[in-house]
Length: 383
Image (cartoon, rainbow, N blue to C red; front, side, top):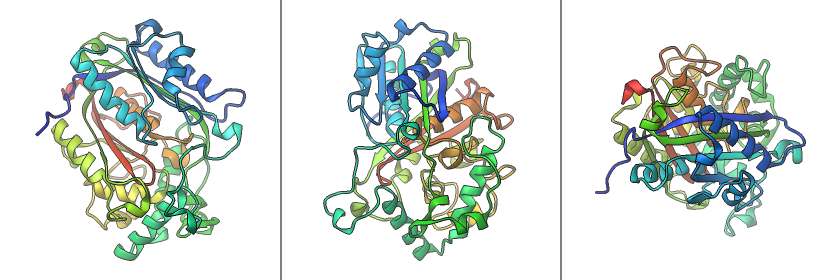
């Protein structure tokens, strides 16, 4: 058996977002660089102290190289590993292990996208597999619709229950100044929204926004000496069970079942320990699937769980407290924003701060429910 993730040996020392919503006039690399500079400053470091760069961009396969050049860095290690929206959690895993090994000291993990102001559509080089293309699916929406339809068939999940996810996200967003989508949203509004790929309607889909995010990951000991509270990474794990949705072993069970269990084992925690949970909600069905697979409710009970109001403000499990990808932002890939919201909760800086938050989970998703990666963050008191 391989050694577990190095618990609490690395920590987020700096973090930043930039340009959430609409930021016309900025390219993706310019946005990522701005967020990166702000995160380094937040950590109390100089940019030349960064010796590893991890970066995915929607329009540049060599984003890590481009960001290093843009910032004038000569890093020891650069990585643009792409697993979709889970890429940044994978970057944290790689960087944390390298920091523990002494190979690098300060890793900058950054992302930026101008997809709303540059065209208003999802920007991705990915597409359906050759075996799926004859059926003319909408990529990636139809794949998630397939999972939703199967969940409805197998467990009796309803469109009203899926709409509860969107309504809860909007309620959180309405009290978050950074969130892009605000205003009233009801179950009836969601049910009346335009159907795109049955059973997923427009209200079940994430936003299309601009936005950039970055974190500075270093050793926990170094982070403790910084100007902001250190946020140790207590556990992290990734898992991949398929790429194309047509190869998914079970449309109602994702690899989050594995990544979550391994991350929690490394951290020494259980689902009942978390103060907030940040989930990659590209579509409303995601939240239901991940709540089940991560152990917050039993398989098949995700629909009734969200319908009960458990994940909304005032509920028993604060989920996507910034508004998530459904109402806060979704600039192509949301994963890093979920991680930052978890860290902000622990630092006491989140717009919808949950009093006493010490332990937070961020779960990220890439492809068509393909790549799953779970990050568990804690306060210094949890070490």
